[in-house]
Length: 251
Image 1 (tube, rainbow, N blue to C red):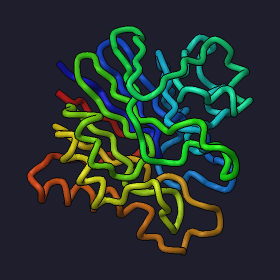
Image 2 (image 1 turned 90 degrees about the horizontal axis):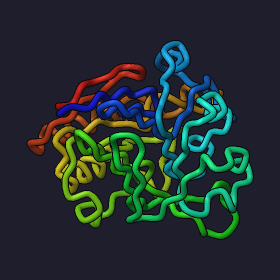
Image 3 (image 1 turned 135 degrees about the vertical axis):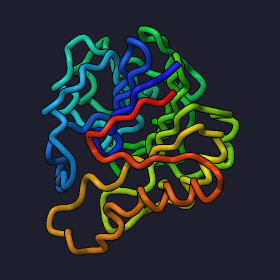
């Protein structure tokens, strides 16, 4: 049994499990608002043709409408329950939207996609009611792959995901500060251990950065991936850092 994992940068990962490809939080353009893609190939140079998209939460660097519009017109989009009610931009996708709450699952092709909690602000904007949760997803087919989305470490991860073959864990952010609801390399290494990950891959770092802030705390841009890998290996686990655009076959 095997799964092919291709990191396209930030939180965008193509998970090819058997004949089914799951694309996470697609950002396929060179810019998102004030953020510029600073590393990796153009994702559209070798486009992914997913069978399903999963969105972890509504922040613009995870629910990016221009990127969603670049995908096939029949691709289902899995979102947190209630997302289309509070974010009108998703309504254009009509019945392609599949809403899940933590603990719920949907089947697409050869895989099952199960929603799990995430400790993160799931709102589109900083103001407004917290009515839509952030999610992680567990993709189960030939292998079990955990995409954590954006989240702080929570000891309950061991209950959400008792084990997985591959864990895609956020280890940084997109700017010179990292606020609440995020993991740094140290806490992401704890998440790798809690989920009994056979292999851990760092994501959500080293891709997007605010325009004009290239010289501000540059160590927070690319360094978190290697830091995370070193911590996981020091604890006896297995981790690999991919470059944006690189792919790996996980057995």
